[in-house]
Amino acid sequence: MIPGVFEYHRPGAVAEAVALLRAHGDEARVVAGGHSLIPMMKLRMAAPEHLIDLQGLDELRGIEIGAEIRIGAMTTQHEILTHSGLAEAAPIMAEAARQIADPQVRYLGTIGGNVANGDPGNDMPGLMQCLDARFTLAGPDGTREVAARDFFESAFMTTREEEEILTSINFARPTGGWAYEKLKRKIGDYATAAAAVQIAVEGGKVTAAAIAMTNLSDVPVLSAGAAAALTGTGCGPEAVKAAVDAMQADIDPVEDNRGPVEFKRHVAGVILARAIARAFERA
Image 1 (cartoon, rainbow, N blue to C red):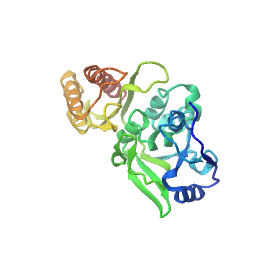
Image 2: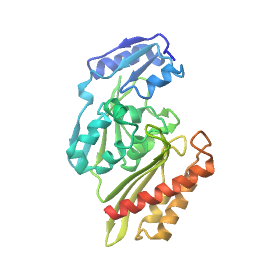
Image 3: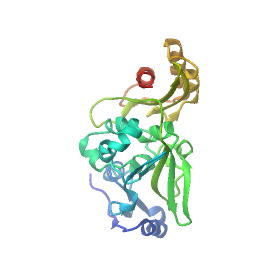
Image 4: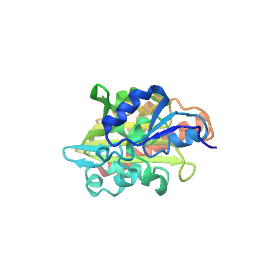
């Protein structure tokens, strides 16, 4: 398929990009790496009259490591994978990025595009909820922060206003054990189910946990019940089963070409159990 006719814009600053969005309203869309929007345009599922390319905005790139970690929205998955400081400070980021699509996609696909589109099949939204990240949005009235756990409203719908651009992602440097486990039908596919797990352990017992699931509802699912089921335990079989059962109560999968609901629920349980085991071992 061929996209519809559109006018192409390549701003040189965030303020210019925001001004273009304000000028053209819902007739405009921003494009980062393009791996979500361009296929939708080819299928005529999206038909913006103005396409605003963020590739020229170097201010949206880069990774800063400290007590907090800041990642610019235009940072690619490849850059996340190859940044040695990030691999040490937040190894779950590289573990998740490595499982996104294929090398060609990772060279261009950005963390901001993966998050801002609101696609429930994307990997980073659930991971950002697991890490309790915050998103910085720039708009006509300045900037504001939104918690990742409050950002996603429904499939492809977020709290980002039409005139706003996601500029960066911040989260506290994680501690303890981690795992990002994913099952997909083939290289490059979305997850049938995926789980992001962070676990803090002291004296052989879980003191804190965060668990988020991907592509099992119309938004990423942060399962507080699953995390609570692990807290205070040594992640034995009974605790893991309780966590899986709690997660199952939170998800709402639908039947599609990745399988029926029963299969997806089964896969979600297997994936989560594996992720818990790896995260606890690493902790």
